[in-house]
Image: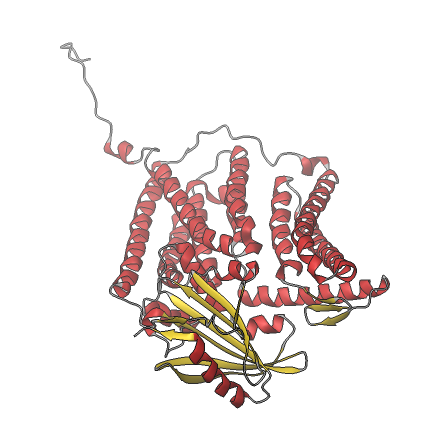
Length: 539
């Protein structure tokens, strides 16, 4: 109040308004939360599709819990870090985000883009943490975010190699144990031959599923109990050993059931045994982690730091300014990338119709043809909209088996995942896992069926010392039946699919196997004759 009695109201400085702690830090935190939710939603389709990654749904909540625990003991008096290195890493991650999202959109199950996307979001998060609290905060908070990597599907080459190795080792160990118990058994790849029949060892029995879940649990328990690096490594090794031993026990149990009660009795024991060994493995690992915690010294067992007594954002205006303008620029760039990606694919999907226009017509009036119920395992893998499995015997004594699946154009992320997953299944990967030996193929062939050009691939396998001829094709609706679909087997084919805007197209799957013909040429001629009776072309 001045000498005249008039109260003076001073305006807040403009710089104080600009650097209000309610603008920069909380906007950055909101942006990061949206990024993590969007990433979790995209990966969630894979967590639902791959049984071995179902545990991924729990990982975001575990990450949030670990972050909350570390927030309670955050370092006191942390100062903001230098923005130069953080801004350079942010810019690099933002640039890579563009091709990552462009390619991920056309192939949401590509392991490489899933990993890159996760690393980019982690980089964004750690850069913001560094800008907010410098190296002390970076060292303190990095684990909860890097831990999220356990939910990202492994590279296919690594996972397949490890799965096949574990399955064969599992079978070999089980066969040796069966011989010790006086049960005669012979190994054929991933199949155990018993006197009552054969027992196939699938991926669920390989140990890979419990191995990936125990890897996640080992890392979580190591952080939960604040174990040292050495003890965390022991916990990881223990998880691997437990997962393998429990899966051998499961396989041994199923083989014993098949030997004493018949192969048909295995189905009723399969899932309960799987749940039991998974629970037993987790409890054993938990007991190991608790034992390692008790073995720590008093200094190691203490809390890493006492709760901070400083305000939540005790930073100078320059730090808050960096957080605000960097988060604003990043938000604008990410929106531009997402909008541009969506526009590109919608542009190519507009006006696209079904050029294939054919289906399988089953001749129910002929007793040689019969429809077979598709096993639940196959239905779960393919998630098709229409499907049929049929078997018959031709006049020459050839035994035929046919699979036909149809997917309508995708209207959701989960549907796109199902369509792309179907492209990964083929005779070259599925049949060798069943104990069949590849002999030749694939060879591209072209057939003329009911006035329609049909492209297929021809394979030859050896099954029970007999030749098995397999014909396979998968077709996207816009390309018709004369062109095989792009199966996205390498980087070049995936980039080509993205440039072509192939995202939500429907597709058809046709696989025909025949035994009873020695020469591939004879099998091909018989295929042309038999397909004329089961394929119907729309006029």
